[in-house]
Image 1 (cartoon, rainbow, N blue to C red):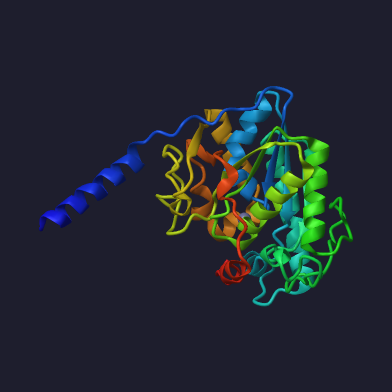
Image 2: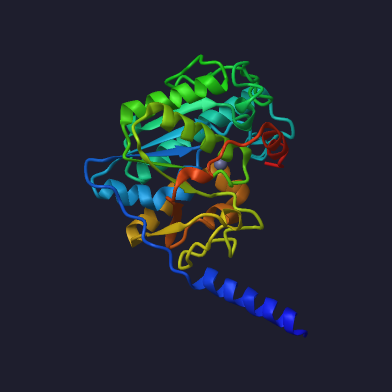
Length: 314
Ligand SMILES: [Zn+2]
């Protein structure tokens, strides 16, 4: 091996070592009486990313809320499995949405949340990235449910057209009402278009609400089969997601009862666990990762990037 290649290899090992060995700082809890808001693209993300942190926060006297952007009503595999049909109908997808909201309520209760602190906006699963540009003003139609406006009675914005402007306004109004000291949102680098779409809308709604809440980010779809090792491994630590290289991660270590509550919450999602158990249980770990650094990297993304990323397979 030539000198240059040996030096490059040594550098690679050093870098790898620093990635493995660097111990991220601890993620603090809020103070008793403060409010926490978790913004979740689909029913189950709040548990995967933050279930332990939510449970620990509630124990510490924090008032915690979850807002779900979509009801997960566009997931073909879950609908096909649940209703035993290769081509689920619009009515099936709406039933799936209602089922997933019931599951989310049960999961939230496991994490210590009251029904009144669980908010379902009911925007279109699979459509959040579209609401940025083409459908910021013109309503989007879900190819799954057939709806162009919120159709779930559980939503505080029932009848609201599926536009980016309405979603942003609904989120800003929730933030103004709850006045959270901390908002947990997806990272822009999360691969799922509904996730990075949610990040963008949550950031702009937080700015519009103008309360200066702290914002921390999490990743669920981190690329290359992350989290490693895939599958249930409750003694393992969560490794850094490959997509989150630019982030400075903080680690929240779960107490035994936090991890137990997180598992119980996850198991409430029967419609999801049935179709992707290994992936979902990969998030039952001894810790959770959050990035709470400067939001500078949340630059505006260009229209071409939106189109390109919207083409992703999720
Ligand atoms: Zn999701």
